Image (cartoon, one colour):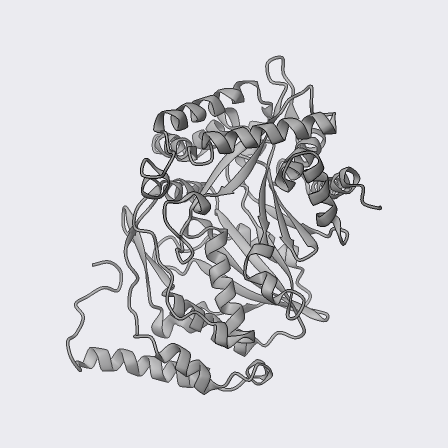
Length: 491
């Protein structure tokens, strides 16, 4: 029956009375008014009305692991495969209100502790355990970069644990409210659902969710496979083979020992105001996308700062990109809490890498061709190949396989949040939104570029064994300088 499962009592049985009693006691303890409640006119009665309208839940629906979740769980065994999202908020943090809102958010969305079997998983309600998995307040003087770096290297419980670690970090005039999460359980879109619920239950309680999220019970094929209009399995397989073959000429990191060290650090970089608007104009004039501009700039930066050595047959450079597959699904996935990502890469040819216009044109052609050929959707074939190989290789052998066969110099994860809920609150309570992506075993660094309002936030996750912190600082600064130069922004 799974973790915490058992026959449900019928009628007014003692088991039901016990569960309801625990819920009532917990809500009485949590629902003392706070400063945030008074600020938003949110009373214990309004909170109780929102949560009591839903029946007490015990377990979510069981779902089988999809192919990326299986692969990410393999990576998690090599090194913690964590990610994070953080909101910058105006004013002073209210720890009590934030803890209450967090517990209520998990309960409202039917999220909690993981129950894992060999091929499937589900969530169970925390009930009385919620307090022990609450919001942590960072010690005074803690820097965000250091806190995130520590969290990215800290493993979650293997079985039966909660895959989320929320925290508050107070600074002068503002505070950070964020969550580090086990990446195999959720993609960026899923965590935005959780972050939205946590936020609105503090600052806009009337917008709180009225129904829980869903876990997709099927795999990638049921969403992105043959039933999807225009899907051609043969073309998808051939595009994956061509993608793999291009790595025969791609430069790679030659230091095997350093590549085996997968510890990570995070750095956050500021960008000049108005940069994203000028980048949009630059991309439009070149017939490219803003993400094409990011990828081309990353290729040039990695060419200078990442130790991918040239060899006689290996003269080009590869940069990966993470793709949200939800828009390509054959059904709406707005309320699905899952990991539904693909990935692909662009090739920076040696003859183009020093010529910005030629490089951007090449990147743009590649990304257009990949979209038309369904290469992001076909990444499930590559995931399956990695999954099978990982079952027969040791830890060192698996990392070495990625170093030799899928040698990315860097990668980017790009999201425009002006299309989503943070844009509604931006400028009032919400000042900025930061995303953090893991490097995984394929690349020594990942940029996270996030647009909100007129601002652009740039995060960099890197492996210090390959890229020392001082070089990472130069690399991030050079990336922003390159964006400023190509967009004609003032220094």
